[in-house]
Length: 162
Image (tube, rainbow, N blue to C red; front, side, top):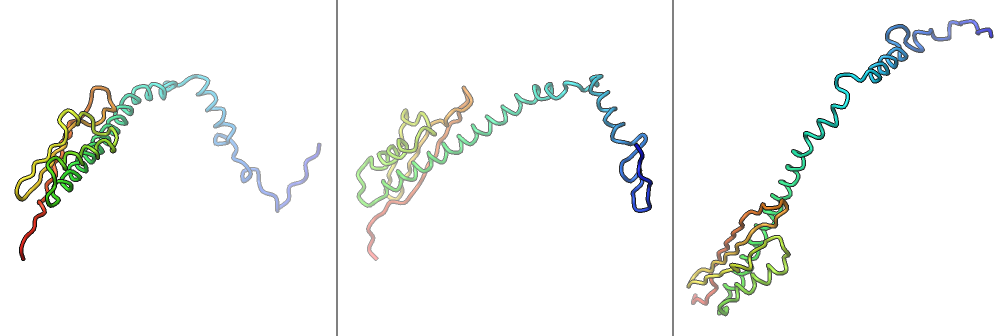
């Protein structure tokens, strides 16, 4: 088969593809040889992953546990504030704050556990109401739970002459 004659408008072989030591065929051959020989690092990725995976899982579960603790703190503080708001009303009956905080905690779910043992406590003085809610955060990691205790304060509403 005869090849067409090269003209000035056609590109040279070097412009079409690299030749010699740097050609793609040469690189491909070197990669095949290295993979076939099984270099010194062959199989290193699974070993690195096996070493790092427990650390990654511990960090993941620790961050979830930390988030559960923050939600438990927020739940306890909102329950305490709800109890203060109920107890500070003019002529509120005794125990109104504890009842409101208990209702809030039952509706909030299980983010705060163990609060039933102590229950919310509200102390009403002549000028101020203080409610405290305590318990433990929900445990994501077995055997790990953090104590939670939140207190809210408010002034008692009263009639004054102006």
